[in-house]
Image (cartoon, rainbow over all chains, first blue to last red):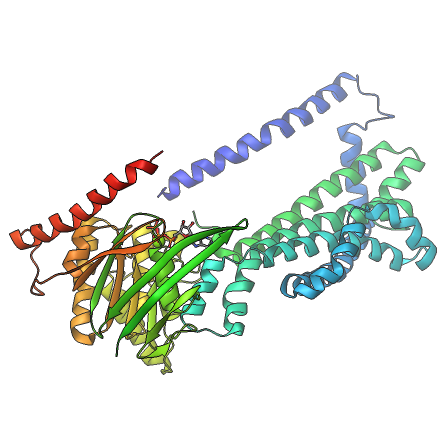
Length: 260
Length: 256
Ligand SMILES: Nc1ncnc2c1ncn2[C@@H]1O[C@H](COP(=O)(O)OP(=O)(O)OP(=O)(O)O)[C@@H](O)[C@H]1O
Ligand SMILES: [Mg+2]
């Protein structure tokens, strides 16, 4: 067993190690900009980026866009994850449903949600519905497939233990099958969340009047490289925050998998 | 009364090929008797225990407990300790042991009984630990406690001490004997350890593989205070060993 001190050292090493490449890239960018060898019509300079950030930060327009995107992600993800969990559980638990849906799932799954955006705009118009649908689909598949997988992760040896002790089907379901499925379900939720975030940016780039995706699209149209880069940095950072939060929750819920 | 295994046969089919794992197994076991089963790996010992536990059905023959055929698990009468620990990774030591209790008891009584069994297998202080935090031998001890807690009339043990160090092993053998002296349940113990088989068994059943058959049954005519270092004990050890060596000679025809 490692001591607290050793743990802290390992963590520090990990953080420093992970920071080397980003620090190097940013440093190189700053130096290039200082020497004036940066083509600022394509790639903005650090000063411009910071200035743009401060301006949008203080006039609230950055928050407005981030807030729009985040709200869409949460709404779309909730719908997609809910459907994925329900259908995934039904497919995982009931063989007739598995047989009934297997062909449908295999045919629909390989279709990238992005390719369906024109359809949804046609059917649902350019408003919120079509965007939420795309985000919901984006998160639906990984939740669905990982939930189905989770129900196949039950160890038959543990079910045999329950049988020897004469436990009911309900006990087997709640004390063995469901806990066995949880790790995989969580993997699905995590992937679903990151797909939802990808989908929102895409949907907003195609049709929206707010959001981080809209911000990037707008910057491209007006040739504003500083706004463009700010949008991209925001996407990266928010994605990282979301993943960290989900991973934190995952560690709490799937506590038996995180023992050192 | 007791357990009667009559002409039991079990055939598995693997890729359309029939594999005869057990053939003509006959055993009459009295109530309160301790039976040790020894035999090489793959000779069908676990398969036989599963049949007795009602987890599997024989292809032929019949198994009866008190003259009633065993057709499904009977937790009130039959308990089992598996070859692997088979614990729930998401449950604490306490909860895993409690899972073995099928009696209707109050919360306090349950907690008391769990505590008693944690002490019995020497895991005090680890009540709230998860299986991933235990060593292999500790996990097996949890599984032993879970199997004992229901106090079944017939307890099936599938190499329960295989993963333990010599000291823990002897301690637990002692504990099982102590519980047996109090409760006089029937014990069927599968083991690879000939000393253990003789130390615990009223009779030692030697099985041989392909197909699994009962090769020989020894009655151990030693008093319960058995001394592993005594000459009588050594004589039994000799006899059982000879049975194995003979099997090896016959087997050389098939060796790879
Ligand atoms: N469910 C099953 N399906 C097919 N074959 C099986 C099944 N269970 C056991 N067998 C086969 O039966 C044979 C005996 O298995 P068993 O587990 O009873 O052996 P064992 O005597 O307990 O061995 P060990 O001492 O290694 O535990 C093996 O050849 C095994 O492959
Ligand atoms: Mg076995």
